[in-house]
Image 1 (cartoon, rainbow, N blue to C red):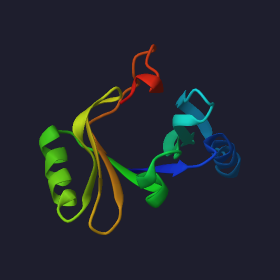
Image 2: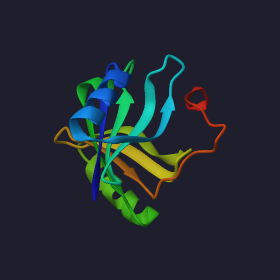
Image 3: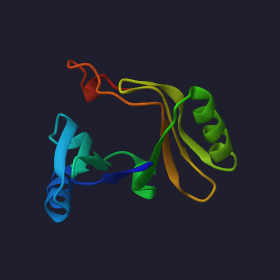
Length: 134
């Protein structure tokens, strides 16, 4: 399954629009200090539907506002896909651990498609906040 993430300006308004337009429910989310979304998960009929993130200050996100996410069942498979997609492309975030995944990476392939590759994700610790994120 491929997940869809979008980077927008005025993420609170975008989340409200998408909730109404698609009968979506806001699930796990983290707010930035200014009330915009560092991350938001929307679902439809109990299934993941869309992730919405504030794009401010992120040039890659403004150029590539749509990100396709693929979850892998092993680090080896993730590394293989990362290597192939990076060839002739551009690495946005190298393979690393994140507060919500033991292994993840972001790459824009040679065709301009932005990919978020990860091992199974989970919610970060309750005391985690975007201000702690590098």
